[in-house]
Length: 395
Image (tube, rainbow, N blue to C red; front, side, top):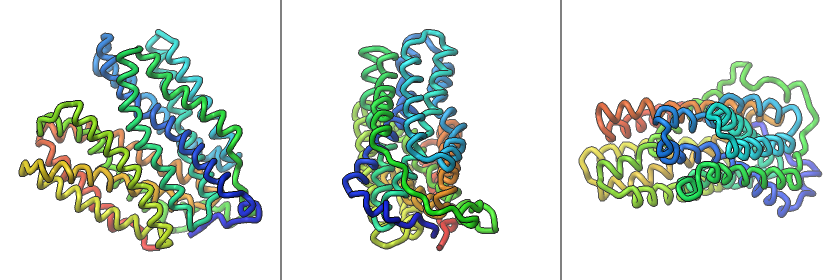
């Protein structure tokens, strides 16, 4: 496993400064997550003002499009010029785009600014992870990265609580200012508090492309993450509808449970990271999480099909937590294996694959649910997780 080894400068950085940079990275990534995953919560407000569901859906998808289109490009920039500039520039772009989107009336300009906000949001995905890998020693890196990976579920949970309420009571522009202002604060914080981690002297071997030479380790980790994100995206997208339509829960009760699962998922990511530090491996725990995801999704399939709701609901919560616990493990493994001169691009490829899979789940599984019902969709997600297990590298 290729790692950034501690240098004299790293050891001189105190724990307080490390944790401050981790907190700033989490805050920047959370603002990104709210911008990307919070815009779909504008759908009720957009349709209420007269937009068709198709037009509103296209608008709220644009931040994700901007994210996916630029993740690898941002990773290349991180590899070339460092993490601090990328974090500041990306969060500042997200701030400007969000504020501008709140001020315009033209739908084309509005959509373009949402796209640009997604471009800015993509910057923190690789850069904040690189800061953690560079400043935290290997025996604490899994925990630190697990904390960093809580930003996504926390962002989704906070967006679910804030965006619809603000949009309903104060309008769409005010709702867009929620992630925009967070991004502006993050830009100032990263400018002041982030320090680029030192890199070892560049050798030809260090700069070599880790995706060449016959080693498939990184590609296998990417494939595992894409397969394991399918159960995650399935539950994030359809569990609320399943609770409401099949089990008869109110939308308020179903929404409250889904928000709680996001915070439990954040705790699961931290626990998985600490576990990987304790056993000295990212890939061993990753394999066991994949197996647990198969078991949980298969059990959910059976209990949903038999209408054992009293068991299906706790299994849905457990599957939701398990299905997000692999993210930090895979993210850390990619950064460590790719090395300091390729990890930006490696993390960009990692996130691009996952986000493409997440984007495909709603339409594909929506058709499946329409044709066969929710249990079949849970079964397909379980099969995807099962396909991931043998792909986990054994290094």
